[in-house]
Length: 130
Image (cartoon, rainbow, N blue to C red; front, top):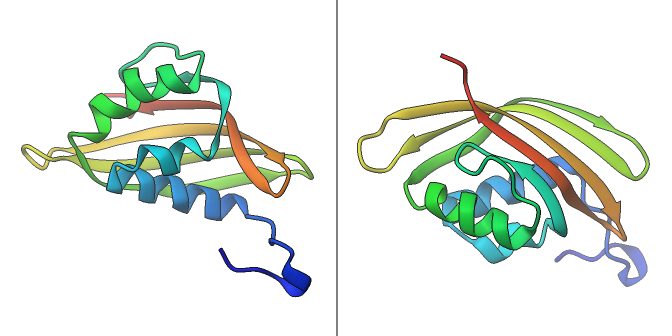
């Protein structure tokens, strides 16, 4: 990690959090993704109706979805950032590995600044309505 003046670790921006998460999805790097979440995260997903812990989110949502996903990215990002809290609403897209089917959806992410890092306390990912 780059260090700022006098060896202090600079604050991570919300945009950097989104980039890190999207990179983790594409790389199927569950450890990197987990670092951006609180343990007692509450999440609604495209597969799991409700997850009430980070372990449950990874096992029931991330692993089954990310293993068949490629080219995940966020679009049309709107960030409402306060001193220690942020709300992100964004569109996302990805392709299915097996047949290149384009998947599109929406995301709402609630972040809390803990120390110098943003951590997700709640996420809601859904597929685009048909």
